[in-house]
Length: 222
Image (cartoon, rainbow, N blue to C red; front, top):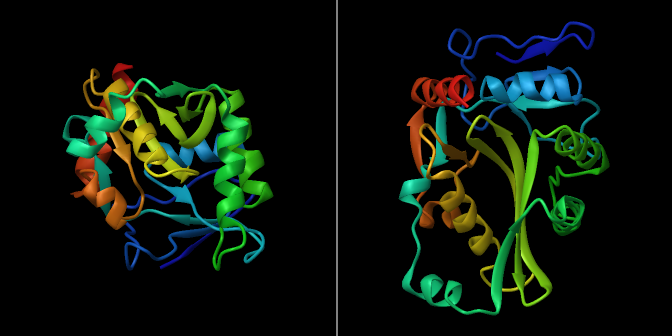
């Protein structure tokens, strides 16, 4: 079942009562991309994944099997350890959010099903301005070589997109993110959908209920 949302009535149905038919199928259609809608969505494990280039209104997803990375379980290969130990590489946080999200958009907008269009860029940039979204940047000397951005609630990070301009750029950013939040209880990196790349970095599936238990504890204790 796909729910029709009213733009003037901000709510989402309970995914536990009305689970999506498939993990990669739409859960709701409609609503808005305002900060209020987005924070409510992410607080319930729901996220938009679409583009006005292909659809006329927001489409929302809520997989019941969540693909996540627990920060303490991040996999760092021997080659990545070697790379990270080189003084020419460094990582920063929230130093150039606009550059990160625009690189992510540019690398995807021409591909089939591209979802990171102008409307999404504006929405997440607004979230960043309000303190609900952050970026991680990877550098080689003074050159930006990769990064990622996503939404933050409590000590949970909801990954939206990543990019690499040089090999391992996004991996450097992801490892730095995991190390930064691993000190907190109930921290988690939500990967949204499984990919071979994220699985190789330590991603695994957990049930939606466990996911929401972690998220609620993180928000309430932060």
